[in-house]
Every structure is written in C-alpha cells, then in structure tokens.
Image (cartoon, rainbow, N blue to C red; front, side):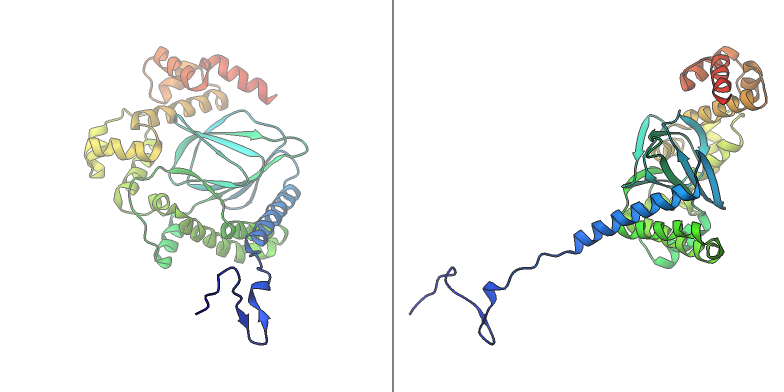
Length: 328
C-alpha cells in the first residue's frame, strides 16, 4: 500500500483544479469596519465643528448638548443628572470622589444617578479643539427599552459611572444622531428613534446593571431615591438611621450600597453638595462666607472654611476672588 505524505498529497476539485493552489483570501471585514469607524469619527468632527464654531455649549434639542473648547479648561464642579457623554475630538476627565475617569474618541462616559462631579477638558487646541456632546438619559425611556428588549442582566449596586469602549454599532447610531444637526426638520421624528437605539446599544454593551439605577425597585433605585433626598435637603442634619429606615434598608446595607454606587459615603456626598451650593451663593448672590455656610447647613464658620479649602484648594474669599477674576 502506498501512503502519500501530507506534504505531497494534493486535493483536486472537479475539472482538475488544484485546491492547494487556490490563494487563501484573508477576511477584509475587520479592515472595512476599522475604515468605517474612522470615517464615522471624521464625520462627527466635521459636523460638530460646523454646528458649534466658538467655545462654549449649544443646546440642540432638549437633553442634547454640544460642547467645544479650543484649550484645556479649569476643573468645573457641579451636580449632574444621568447622562451619556461622548468625545468626538480631544480628551476629557471627570472626578467622582477620589476616582479619575478619562474618556476620548474611543471611549464613552455614562453615569446613571445624580452625582457631584468635576469635569475638565484635558486635550484641546486651536487646531484640534475639544468637541463632544452630552445626552441626558430619560428614566422612562430606559425602562421601556429594557422591558421591550428583554435584556437580562445581573442586578446589584454597580458603580454609577463607567468609561467603556465605543463599539461599531453604537458609533453608527451616534453618527446618525449628529447628522440631524444638518436636517432639523427631521430631528423631531428621527431623534427619539435614534436615542432609543443608543440606549439599546448601551444595554448590549453591558451597561444594564448601571442603567437599572433608573428603574423603580431594587437597591440601586433605593440609592437613587437617597441621592434625590440629599440633593433636595442638603442643608438639613443627616440622620442615617432615619433615611435607611425610610428606604427599607439596614444602616450597614445602606452605607455599603451608597458607596458602591457613588464612590463616597452619604456624609461625603452631602458635604460636596453643600459646598458646591455655598460656592454658587457666594459667586452668584454675593453672600459672604459665613452667610453662605450657614445657608447650606454649617453652624461653625471655621468648620465651613476648612471643608471648603479642602475641596476647592483655597479659602472661600480667595477662591471666589479668583473665580471672579477669571470671568472678566
């Protein structure tokens, strides 16, 4: 019996065609997808830069805001509601407690409860300005998409903020949303459909546990209720036992889940809300430090000044003078 070696054997197709001599074609799908993604990002830069031509922000329609900056910015502190944030060009940084998150054209930012955050544009120039947008997340829309899509995900107190890679499907939906900048007559009908798809894409991308913060029921939603209470009643003394009981949680469970979601304790959260509001009162209503501190719940001016300096890097009077100087 003659045994042919694998090296010498040749498989032939009908008609005498030598299969081994047919060139193996490498898949071009990854390359085509990469080219399509690059084209999409370039289109986003072009359309956003034409829509907003000077530094600042532009509200395109309710819940959708464009932003542009031709230079890195100072840190901006505020309390922000649930949102999906995307960078078309440049790089942005956000602080949540002691944690630092950076996102750029390859990665998006999502946060799903009201949080005291510090935003800062890190990479921008006259030639390549920072360009991005923020899309507010509507709880009723998120709930509808979760129910209708049938997605199942592990429930729990996931951190409320995340930076994740932007996949091709999500990028495609983003491009179509931004195209509506050039056809406002279509945005009233098309924008809600595309935003719904973006929420769906976020779910497919693994954001279900975070988006569940916007649903009713469960520990995540209880923490969202606690955050809402603290925002509305920040000037009142914080009674953890009463708040936990009202939420139907143990004190230890409340502390654990609150920190899991917000990266800070309830007391730290309340303190940041108080200090940011005091800063606004001094800057916008011309209150002195003692009056602003008392208005937000501080009884001891020296304690207020100490906490203020720790958060903002300078005592109240010096910080407000610096802020006013930067405005004029």
